Amino acid sequence: MLKSKYLLLSGVLLYSATTCAESTLDPFELARSASDRLSEASSVSVHVEKRFDVVLKNGAKVEYSGALQVLSSKSAGLFMDYGDDLSARQVWYDGSSMTMLDPLKNLYVTIPVEGSVAVALTTVSEKHGLDLPLKPLLQDNLLEKMEPVVRASHLGIHDAEGEPCHHLLFLGEHLDMQLWITTGDAPLLRKLVVTLWEIEGSPQQSLTFHDWNLEAVIDPEEFEAQLPDGAMAIEILPAGGE
Image (tube, rainbow, N blue to C red; front, side):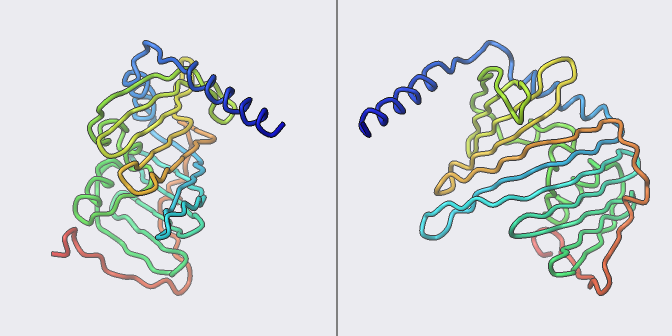
């Protein structure tokens, strides 16, 4: 009986794999349509659930989870509140400076920077080597920030968190990325999975996006740093330590 159940399960898995056919829809165009919709929004709010793997020295792969809340206004600023099983970070950008707080250590750094949210994120990354969560999305084009794509496929209309979505696969030189873009005339990114296959154990990072609001009304005070009592300022060196 045990053998029969195993054969049945194997048959189901084989059937599922062999019936996955690629469509002729353009995965780049579908991803670009969702990215363009975000870039056209003057203000955005979204809640993100994250799962990620950590490969231990003994080869075991452990999954952790976290969550991120984002409020972003192109003209006014940015607020991020992130926490997972291993770390936490809060970020404020008010148009003239970016403040990053580690709530677990109660340490923060403030970096003078100006411009739009996309410009500020690029400046902080280039000058100080700091890449914030969802940086490619907030810079308006997810695919342009990805490494060169070797192959792209539209895998079909598949479920992501209860919604029918275009399931896209982008194969890169060092990682693979899957996107789930909602169907219809108002495309949005619903889920993203990155597989780092060049790292031993091929760890994955998975993001699911909830409660998108592309017409969010955000109080400018949300972009002003709210530091806890006793928080200590630290200095940050330019990228490369110069």
